[in-house]
Amino acid sequence: MKRLLTVLLVLMLVPVFAMAFTVTMVTDTGGLGDQSFNDGTWRGVEMIAEEFDDVEAQVIQSNEQADYVPNLSKAAEMSDVVVAVGFLMVDALEQVAPQYPDVYFIGIDFDLSAAGIPNVKTYTFKEHETAFLAGFLAGAMSESKIVGFIGGIPVPAVVKFQIGYQAGVKMYNKLHNENVQVLIGYTQNFTDSQKGKTMTEAQYSQGADIVFAAAGLCGLGTFEAAKEKGEGYYAIGVDVDQDHLAPGKILTSAMKGITAAAYMGVLDAYEGYFTAGHEELGLEENGVQLSEMKYTKDIIPQWILVEIAGLKAMAKDGEIDIPATEDELKAF
Image (spheres, rainbow, N blue to C red):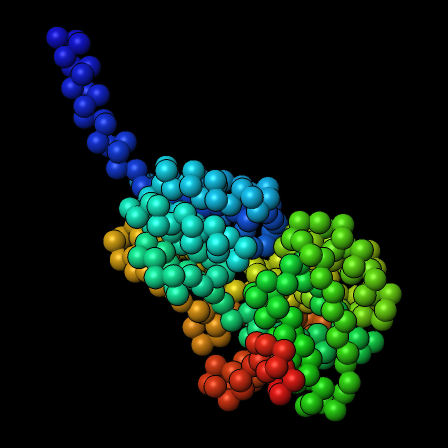
């Protein structure tokens, strides 16, 4: 009798375990702990797991680009949903997703809709729009009339950050008859915080007093350089609200809705509303924005905040067409 009860208990429990809905995120080479892109996307996945008891969230970290295909494949073999992080994963996802038609794939920061894969949904963002506002702020706050930009690898999202930032400075110059210059550099990776620090120090030595880092973990080096440089020198964060990483030294963060995109993509799959395709999110969709500037509002003159609010409203209404490419920037 005891053996029969044990067997019945096991049979009753098996369906419960089988009902678990598994979500696996595959990081890019920046990995968790970047305080930026990967962490922001992972937070969206975590929110689903916290909201629903039957959702299990896990992560596979990539150490190099060669890891993308095997990591995505491994994730697909044990998951209902796979979240692929970063533009550099686009080719790997296009290769892997068709092999697992019963698994939903969500790509963050790239557009794979042209491939027409029915189990893939991708999200991109109008980084140039939030960077435009950050550039205007940098131009207005710069005492030296020189500001800097440091990117990681010049993938489309990072280049849009650069172009938007330059356009914001250009708008400030036009409205206030100034000539603030922008220094530009790329670390060629998203992981070397020391290189980010060294490059930031170099831009400070060339006269910049504000540096915007769109470079993953490299940006942590930018924040460290700003803290060490002292009074009158600042940084600008990226992707998520990074202001707390160096309170008072990060003027603002040019944020994009990576957490919300990951959350909504997984939620749609979980609730049975998944649709393949692509979405691009910008100011109009509340998909990009500046941080609240919790630690710096007291040092930013009110007129600057008012002008930024006005520019944001004009951009949302289509009165300003913020450039996203070099050609558009030249014509802006």
